[in-house]
Image 1 (cartoon, rainbow, N blue to C red):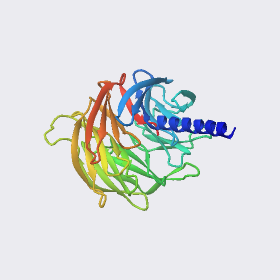
Image 2 (tube, rainbow, N blue to C red):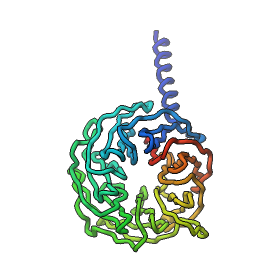
Image 3 (cartoon, rainbow, N blue to C red):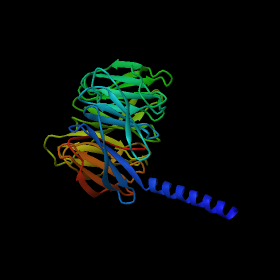
Image 4 (cartoon, rainbow, N blue to C red):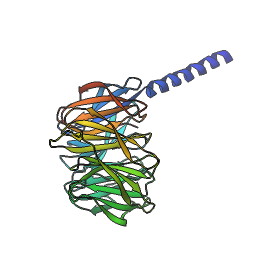
Length: 355
């Protein structure tokens, strides 16, 4: 009798181990397809980085920017065509159910879940504003935002520092970054000690990404075709360290930068270059935050968005114009090695891995 019970227990434990191994062996990349009103979900085999189509999620409008909850069980999607933000609940196998949508006067161009997990932050390019929604216990958004703040035209992104104390909003047209203090209890945004960091003319800070462990951040400068490093002060102000071109020296045509991301290790930064259609990789000097160009990697036209897998081993870049994805393996030195090109669907707008 004891032997049978022991055997049954071992069988259950073995099945759980195998299930856990199976789940850990792959991850999911979500691609919003703005022309098809759906999100394409691809499964990535972690050992090779190979992507394969898994399923799709229909959206109640043209999807744009996306953001996951920290647990990966809720997906927030900006609706470009109708305005507002949709929230989906995701099961273990990726099955999605629409929990609801919230209406707002504008089309969000960027979404961020605050590090506390209690608020969703959104920026509005055309409307020149930002908003904060409380996240309810079931993951839905409260119908009314707890804060709406007018900033300036072309508010391109909204990003919190890793500790959740401050919030930053890059603006491409006025060449500035608005700097806020964030109240973790109420979600209120108040102007920081230095409310606006004014950048030089024709720089155009677009997206911003913080270093995972150091008080450093990096922006893509859209018009300047450059990358800028910043030091974060104790009071929540960004101070420019340096600006470097992210384009090849011999490229003289029109172009602009788009997305930017710091590697989970903090050792590398990658930036998307539109026009020349490359991902530029930089090595981070962890003593002073300065950058050294490592590589220019060819991608599909036009690289609006990319994302690094949570384990830091792969990067997936989407070609907004071509409707194709490029997959790269990231080696220990931060160099990108192309492993795959495949169709994504019409006008891929955003790429994000499920945590």
